[in-house]
Each structure stands twice: as structure tokens, then as C-alpha cells.
Length: 566
Ligand SMILES: Cc1cc2nc3c(=O)[nH]c(=O)nc-3n(C[C@H](O)[C@H](O)[C@H](O)COP(=O)(O)OP(=O)(O)OC[C@H]3O[C@@H](n4cnc5c(N)ncnc54)[C@H](O)[C@@H]3O)c2cc1C
Ligand code: FES
Image (cartoon, rainbow, N blue to C red; front, side, top):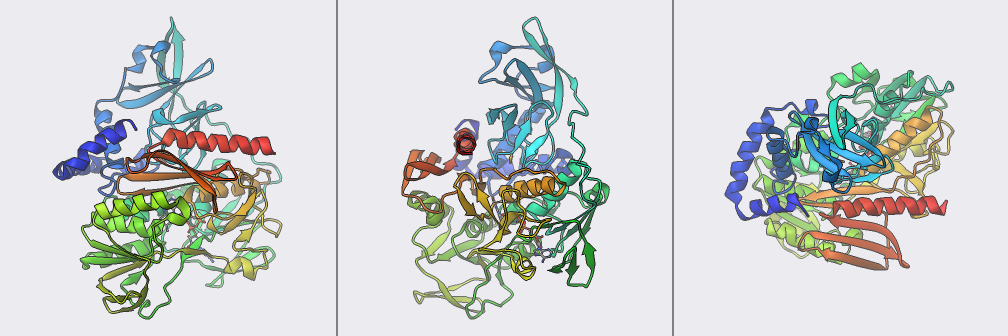
């Protein structure tokens, strides 16, 4: 488990220490400007105080006393461990990576949330981040796979007398081919979320010179949605860390972002918004995401009964939480339980009502379900499982069991539905999602779909699947962007998602709707485990807690299987 767990242990046993250290972290973090640090690198959190925050603390401590040797003075190849050596150049931590006969010097931390790349996996000229599986090209530093979008810094390396010296920073490394001459002039993106933003960013990264109009029904520019149920909701990340890019980015990048613009229809070559604006396109990307399922019980329409999807939703929950000593979460889903953890970090009493016997059993199996329940109970969450809420009268919620619970804040996390109305109205083929081919093109030529709405032929499972994962949505947006420019790239990434509960990150690779066997390597309660979900002996998916390298290796193995099966 390494340093992360060791430092974590210290914090588990002394709450006062958490407070002291949080104060110190707050002071130190306030000294930084998030956007200067690539993709909101400094995500510290009271919610994850025993985990990510400590890694940040660890990182910040190391920033003032950077790790390892001074790489400008030279290091021997014999000092490398598993092809890597962590050191520093001035104040900046730098990772030396040996790939065959070549040595590369790259920034030591991922540009997504600052994951430690020295704990990552090298794969064919790239390095993958242990936390959320972003991937960087070693030669250029380019972020070749989301969730990281910004490149890593790189340095010149000189080999002399069996020593490796790191020299000055390298610039202008990322060489991009020009878009095909057949590239369209006008691309319209419907949706300002994970897929829509990643598509627009990739179009500009690949030097698409035509117009990009992004129409979003949201009132805010694209945000780091996963943060809305984690650090930001917990009160440990300031709001200016939530946007994926500062407002100025869109103008600078030539992306026309129109907020509060709901697209209501698609015609042959233009879309129409609810305000009556018509926007012409040569290629269209639909990335309308999903919307929370609403409760259909008496009292569900009261203002203190909320769902969580957008920044506006999150702000409303935070506002209501300020005057509510007790919250009721309906549903023990990922989002419901992340909200529970975030509200506990705000010292709010939290009750969770859900129909299932164990939280998350359907996705992760009974053992992880029991663990998750125990974990939340350790943090004071009260479960009312195998139960439902039948009515909410003012602050009083009545349960099927007959019990009543008073709560000034109710958050329903009972699932989401893909937003398909627009695609259906346009006559696109849908099947519990918008059907797309391997290139993410819908049944209409020139119209693509990505993210939570897309059902695509997944080469690993051999099935048409639709998932609700941040990284998948971003990667699909990127692939769709490349194909909209006139290239032909299949979407073949193995699905990945993560979830965070207090100090416990859960990583999941692959896709297993049903399995007939789960094997457990390690110990779930000790937070050191790798679970394999198998059908007929074949591993469909792998979930892990603090087994980041094994999770990356499982991802690579699944990719290899896909290549072999083609
Ligand atoms: C609180 C929360 C936490 C999450 N945490 C995680 C996590 O930890 N890990 C993980 O893997 N996944 C997580 N997810 C899921 C992840 O955020 C989604 O899978 C991802 O955002 C999907 O991206 P998308 O682009 O398809 O949709 P979205 O990001 O939802 O974006 C859809 C966009 O389309 C716009 N839109 C919809 N209809 C129209 C229309 N007709 N006209 C114009 N605009 C329209 C919406 O306003 C929105 O801007 C989380 C989701 C939520 C809500
Ligand atoms: S911190 Fe590297 S992918 Fe998230």
C-alpha cells in the first residue's frame, strides 16, 4: 500500500491531528492558484483527509523539500527501481523513466489530480497514472488519455560516464498532424459536460480550425462533475476549482460556449434551441448526458428535496445543509453515498434509506457492499436498508416500515436516465441509449454521440453497453472529436470509473453486469484488495482498493485480450 496507507494510519488514530494538519494544509493551499497547477491539481479535502489530502500534504511537504536526488547532479542507472527514479530539479519533482535504451525526464505528478506517477505503470512509450488511469506520452508529455487533459513538463536528459543528468526543460515537443483537408467547417456540440468539453478541447488540441459551438442547457461552464459529490460538497474545495477551465479559456480557444441554451430539435444541418436560435453544423456531437430520476412520492416537490447533477444542484444542497442538522439520503448508490460522506464532513447527521440489502451489491458484490456499509457506519451514517420512503410531509419523511424521520435536507440518489429526448425526436436509432457504431457515429451520418447517452459496441465484453463514467465520457468525446474531423478511430477503451468514500478510493476497470464468480485477492476490510468479477472463468471486471498498480495491469490485460480477439 505504500506511503499513502502509512500516513493515513496516523490520521485515523488522532482526529486532533487531522484538524491541526487541515489548518496547515488550508494555509498552504491558499498560497496556490489552482489553475496555475494544471488541472486543479491541489484537490485537498477534509472528506478524504486521510487519503488524498495526505498525499497532497505529502506532496506539498515534498515541494518544499523535494524528494530524491538532485537530478541535475547526475544519478546512476543502478539507482533506478522498476525503471523509475524520483528526484528533483530545483523545487520541482521530476521522474526519470527508463524505456528500453531511452531515458525520459517528466513531471512527477499527474496533471489531473496530482497522482504520483512514480507509482504508475509504463506501457509502450507511455506512463499511466495510478489514481484514475490517465495516460501520458513519455516522449512529449502529451496527455493521450483522459481524465488528464494537460500535458506533463519534460526535460532534456544527458547520459555521460554511466550517469544520467537532467538538463533544461524541453519545449514544443508535441507534434500534431494537420487535420485532414476534408475536415468540416462547422462543428456543433450539444452538451457542456464531460464528453462535450473533452471533444471541444481535443478539436482545438488537434488544430481543428473551423468553428466550434457548444450549446449547454447548464447555467455554468463545464465543471468537474465528480467533485460535486466529493470535495466541493464536503466544503474542502473552493468553488473556483470546480470549472474544468477558467471562463477565459473558451474565448481564447475559439470555442463559442452558449450557456442556458437547450437544443430542442435537430434538422438536416442545423439545430434549434428553445430560444429559437438556429445553429448550422457540418458535424454534430450529441453529449446530453443523464438526468437524475425524480422521486414520485407525495411531498417530493418540496424545495428541500433535491437531486444532484449540476453545480446549481450542488450549491442548493450546500445552502440547505447550512440550516439542516440532519439529512436524509434516499438511495445507497455511488452518488448517494458520496453525498452521505460529504455531508458527514460537514458534521451533519446522515440517514440513508434504500431498498437493497447491501449498498452497491449489484455492481460490486456482497463483500464490498458489507464493507461500504460498515465504512459509512464507522463515520456515523445510519442506514435504513430494505426500506423506502413513502411520503415526505414538510420535514417529516415516512418510511415503508412505518418509522418517521425528520430531515431538513433530502437528497434523492435513486439513479439517472440518459437524456434521449432530442435524439429520439430526431429519429436516431435508440435502445436504452443512443446507438452508435465503433466510431461513435449514430444512425445518421455526420451525427455522433458520446458519454452517458451512448450505447456502443464494447470490444472487451463483446456487448453493446452504456455506462455512466466520467473517464469513459471524456474519452468518447475525444474519439468523437477526432472522427468528426474526418479520421476513423474506433473507440476501444476499457471502461474505468472511480468512487471515493472518506479515505477509501474504489477503482473499477471493465464492465460486468452479471457474473457467476467473484475472486478476492487481499482483504477488503484491511482496504487492500483486488476483486475479479468473472463469467464462465473469464474476468469481465476488476475492482480494487489501494491496489492501483494491479488495477492498471488488469486494464492492460483487458486491452491485450481485445487486440487478440480482433
Ligand atoms: C455528482 C456526481 C458525481 C460523479 N462522480 C463520478 C465519479 O466519481 N466517477 C465517475 O466515473 N463518474 C462520476 N459521475 C458520473 C459522470 O459525471 C458522468 O458519467 C459524466 O459526467 C457523463 O458525461 P456526459 O458528457 O455524458 O454528461 P454530462 O457531464 O452530464 O453533461 C451533459 C451536458 O448536456 C447538457 N444538456 C442536456 N440536454 C441538453 C440539450 N437538449 N441541449 C443543450 N444541452 C443539453 C447538460 O446541461 C450538460 O451540460 C458523477 C456524476 C455526478 C452527477
Ligand atoms: S490523478 Fe492522475 S488520473 Fe486522476
